[in-house]
Length: 337
Image (spheres, rainbow, N blue to C red):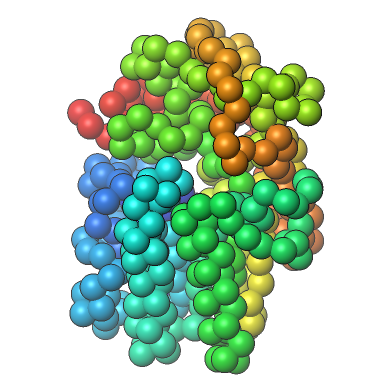
C-alpha cells in the first residue's frame, strides 16, 4: 500500500517524501509544479536511490485524481497541495479560496469513493490569528488575518466535520510554525518564485548577492532586541513530524491537531547574526517601519506532539542556518540550471 502526497514536489512535501521512504513507506506524488520543479523528482531519486512514482496534474481535476486512486492502492493521504503566499492571497482571494478549498473538497470526495479514510493535513500556525499569547497550544481559539490563513482554518473545520460524520475517518491537522533549512545534501530546499516571501530565503539571497539588503520591519517590539520573534523549525524535523503523525493516524480514528515547532522563539536579528557567524558571510540590512498585522512574538507549545507522537524537533538554529546556506550556495538559482 502507498501514501499519496498531494503537492509532494514542494518544499515541505519533498523533504517529507525523503523521510517516508527512509521509514519504509511506498509513496505516490501528485503535483502540477505550480510552485515546484520537475527537477525535484531527479533529486529525490539521487537522495533515496528510488524512482518516485509520480503523476503530473491538479487535485482540482476529479477525473485525473480518480485515476490516481484506481491505479494505486492508497492507504493514506498527506495533503500539501495549496497556494501559500499571504500577500498574494490578499490581492487574489478568489484564487486562494477556489484552489485551496475546492481542491480539498475534490480530494475528500475521491478518498470517500475509494474508501480511503486516513488524511494528514498541512495546516499552519497562522490559524492562531493575532490575539493568542505564546506559547500557543492546540486548544486555543482559531482565527486568521488573511485569505490564505482562512483557507487553513476552513479546511481544518471541514476535515474535523468529515471525521465526525464518518466514524472510520482519521484526520490529523498539523500546525506548522516557520519551516526553514534544507536537506543536508544540499540537493533539495526552498526555491521561491521571484522575490522570496519568507525571511530565510531572503537572507540567503542577500548573502549570495542576488538581493541588495534585507529589510527588517520594526525594531521596537517588546522583545529582547526589538525585532519580531518567531518559532523556526528545520524542515527535516518537520518532515519527520509527518512520519510520526502518519503512524499515529493509521492507528486511530477521529480528528487530532498537533503543533510542530521547536517551542523556542528566535528574533530576526538573532537569525541574521547566526547566519553570518555560521556561514562566514555578510547580510546587510536596513530597519524599516513595522508592517500592519505583524505581532511581536509567536512560538509553539509542542508538548502534545512529544507526548502523543513521540516527536520533538532536534536540529539547532545553527543547523538551520548552515543547511539553508548550503542549499542556496549550491543552487543559486534554485532548481534552474
